[in-house]
Each structure stands twice: as C-alpha cells, then as structure tokens.
Length: 341
Ligand SMILES: Cc1cc2nc3c(=O)[nH]c(=O)nc-3n(C[C@H](O)[C@H](O)[C@H](O)COP(=O)(O)OP(=O)(O)OC[C@H]3O[C@@H](n4cnc5c(N)ncnc54)[C@H](O)[C@@H]3O)c2cc1C
Image 1 (cartoon, rainbow, N blue to C red):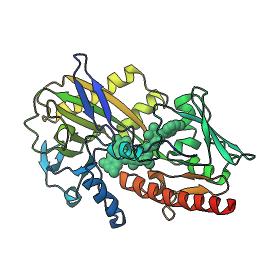
Image 2 (cartoon, protein in one colour):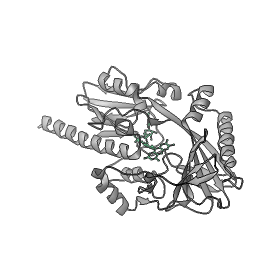
Image 3 (cartoon, rainbow, N blue to C red):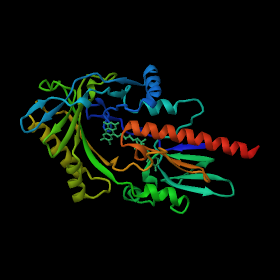
C-alpha cells in the first residue's frame, strides 16, 4: 500500500453554525487562486470542465484608509481568479474520491517509522493508533520536521531527523509568516462596498477583505466577508501570546480589533450577526526550497515531501509541487516493480 498523508488544501474551507442554527461557509484561508504557469493550464481546465472550480468574475479594488476611498486597481487585479465549487476544498475532495483512493480524515500523524526489514513506513497517529504500513509516502507539510509541530501538539515532529537527514534538514527551518483572519456574516449586504474583494492601503491591521458569498456556488442568504490581518499585526499579537494554540481571550481580542479597523473605514455599515477569528500560524512560507525539482525526496526509503514551500507560497505553487511529487512517486514505484521482477 502507498500512502499520501496530509491532504493538501483540505482544511482551508470552514463550516460554522451560529447559535440560531444558521450554517455559514467561509474560505478562511486562500480566497482564490491565479495561474501564471501555462504548463498547468490543462489541469486547471480539466477541473473547470468537471465543475470543481470556476472563475470568480467580480470587481476587485484597493481601498486607501487615509483618503477613505477606492483607488485605481493595479494590473494584477485583472488576472483570472479561480475558486473551488462550492468551497476551496473541492479539488482535494474530488482527489479523495478518485478510484483506488482510500481517505482518512480527522487524524493527525504523530510518527513516521521506517522498518528496514519490511522496507516500509509505519504511521502512528497523535492518539497512539497504528495507521498502517506503507511502501512509500508523500508528505505535504513542512511541519513534519519542524519544531512548530511540538508547539502545537506537545509531540516531537513526526519525521525523525536521523531517518532522512538531508531531506529533514532542508524543511526543518523553512521560515514562515503568520496571519489572522476574521469571518463575518451580515444579514444585509454592505451597500457601500462596490467591489467583492479588495486590499487595504495604509492600514497597519488589515491587508485584504473578500466577500465569500459573492463567489460562484455560494449561498447569498447572508453576506459573508473574510478579513485578513497584516503580517505586522499578527506578529505583534503572537509576540505577546506565543505560538501555542491561541486562547479564546486572544481570539476575542483579535476579532474586536480587526472588526474595529474595518468599521473605521466607513465601509462596514452594519453589525455582523456572526464573527469568528482564526490564526494561520504558518500561513505563508517565506522561502522556496526546491524551485528546480519542485519537491524533495529520499529514494532509498521511499519518501517524497511536497508543498507550496518547495515552489511558491500559493495554491499554484502547491499544485506544481504536487504534480512533481506524483510524477516522482510513479518513477519510484516503477523502479521498485522492476527490482521485484
Ligand atoms: C490566510 C491565507 C491567505 C491565502 N491567500 C492565498 C491567495 O490569495 N492565493 C493563493 O494562491 N494562495 C493563498 N494562500 C496560500 C495557499 O493557501 C497555500 O499556498 C496552499 O494552501 C498550500 O498548499 P499545500 O498543499 O502546500 O499546504 P497546506 O494547504 O497547508 O496542506 C497541508 C495539509 O497537511 C495537513 N497536516 C499537517 N500536518 C499533519 C499531520 N501531522 N497529520 C495529518 N495532516 C497534517 C494540514 O492539516 C493540511 O491540510 C493563502 C493562505 C492563507 C493561510
């Protein structure tokens, strides 16, 4: 059996239920993605034709917090913006339903053990369960060899440095940027906002805002917005509160501060009936560690590591890295099969 653990892009779509039982959906991670590499356009078109993604055709802008007005958009705002249907996790959901794929959810991998006698990897979950033996692994998160794993779980990182030292040392220290986001739901549309997504200029707290309910395939029963903090704001809060799991008090403070900044713009003309903050502790890697090969591997084990941190901190970068990992994996499988003949 082969294992691809850590399903990419899967968590960045959030279902919330209000106290009154209203279900709300937010893309609280990446609001959309763009494609610049024509080499992956075939994949994008296939997903589009299968109804997994669609173009988000709305007006986008830039809001200047000093003049309190929208200013002329720059060119890159005109690039095609794709969103998953009905949420950003649609692509991974579809991949999980491909024939021959068995998916497991809600399980954190705490340990990857290599058995030389069996030539296989054993995976152990955070609650100590044996998850199976695998002839090869593709892992999609840099946290598998980073101290950040211990901050979050109290466990040592899943990949022991001694098992794949060269690979582990490259992912161990990938620097990253943190962000907070605030999910908001309003019962009425915010009439003063003429665009459905915009970045903030001259704000130390907010970097962007996106109207999720304006995306194709979403419910428009409520108007849902997602606010993204600046990196500086997140740094300041994390310096005061630490990188461990944030407390309810921290989230309440962040919710208030992000909402207040939104209200100061004059664009937020009514009170949200729902708000919830989320912290992305390692939202964006600030280094690309495998620009050429697009993934890392240890052919002896066999283990492949891929993700946006290999190529570019974006969904496009993650797709490119995932495709490279898949092709490397097929090559490794062929080699194992040949050795058995
Ligand atoms: C706030 C925010 C805004 C963004 N905006 C944009 C944007 O506008 N456009 C764009 O293109 N990109 C954007 N991105 C970046 C984009 O979301 C990432 O580049 C992309 O999701 C990276 O995909 P990945 O597969 O490399 O990693 P991830 O999506 O992080 O996937 C890694 C997966 O591994 C799982 N995992 C980790 N450890 C374990 C474990 N031990 N056991 C089991 N599972 C584990 C995680 O739960 C996760 O599901 C944004 C990201 C954030 C957070």
